[in-house]
Length: 399
Image (cartoon, rainbow, N blue to C red; front, side, top):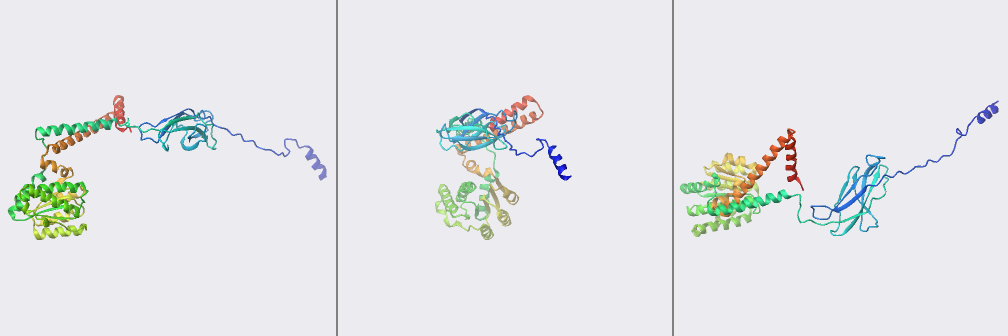
């Protein structure tokens, strides 16, 4: 009976239900290549770069919609072989090749589209270009115009200063130099000048030496001793020469004592302790803190205040200014130190440069104000101001 049932089952099988050996054929689908590829030297650069542009593949965002990126290949020869240099994502139509080895040499490029299955299109048309350096960045006209204006400001004010004295607002700390030295002379006490813990390469230290020259000339005229402990040996040597020159200009080279300008130590708080000891022993009538100061500033200023000295401080260290302002009689803030040489000497070139700098700052402030106003009006969705603001920003932002 079982044999009969098996026979009936077999004769009911159709060809479609019988097991067959099958093989699946996978068809590789290539995307369309990008078209109208062009290559040119990257503009406004120092050379070493070539820019490429193209139209996207027909299968990028449309058609088969299978392109996910574009690969860029480069060769020294038109016929290849081409080496991979970079990739950009789908929808992009440009690529900058910054790896060009030599300027003035012809390089050849092709671009291929690629799918997520890493199937590349046929190469695009072969294009070529040479990298060249440009003399001028055409996107930076704003900086050139501002540079010319600033130069004109300096030249104009220097010429004006040669004809008449230009006004510079009073700097109380510098005007008080004569008063401070005179007070020390009346009290029969020395003047103490502390140049801070900066090095000779620090601009604040150089400014301090300029002020030192003025102070030393006054001490020479009043026959008052000046004491100057130093943190750096090079600053000490420079200070000795400055003071010596000031005494010679005052006609008192015999009163110059090189030993009063001495090296103390390069340990920060050792220097502070040493200067405090000098204050307590010598009890100076006037103390000048000019230069770079850090955590020791308040220690020095409080000790100077305790001995009853008139104190004139000046530093570019913003974090130390509050301590000097609180503990000293006068404080030169930031750029007032740098203006000291011009303010004290009244030299026309120096005075003109100070006024030119002020004019340049005023121009920058006006530019910022104009930009802010245009930005506010543009934010109110006033179309004409939006376009003006965008043009204003682009003029300064290019490059």
